[in-house]
Image (cartoon, rainbow, N blue to C red):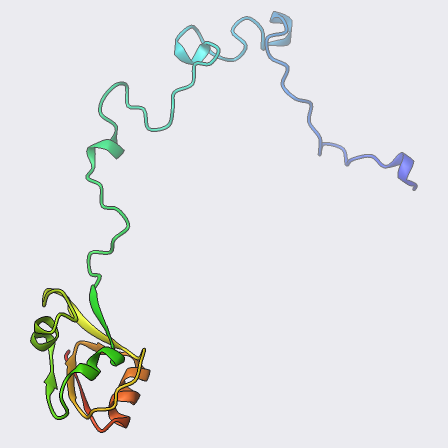
Length: 147
């Protein structure tokens, strides 16, 4: 056996169906397309989702988008911004809104660790990053996480 005399196994290759080549072939006249109609014509394919002129399903259903319905939106505050409060004070959502650090109390508050804090304060928020917790506690403050 050499490369010049390799052949596929018997029965592994089939000849393609030659349609529209006369009645003697068995696939002549309508060329296996049936009789008349849109699907028998050239270019007569129906697009996916077409429902005969009826409003298609993907247009009847409401758009939901990519926003998860249970997503929690946080107002972000950095540790460095909390240094404006006096030592020993309690910083919560209302205090942050009154100082203008967040726009409204509509969203949960998350404290991030960017910046430094030198005063000992009590911070009440929904979430804290680990670095923010460490910096507040190192300055002598306390952290209260709302659940």
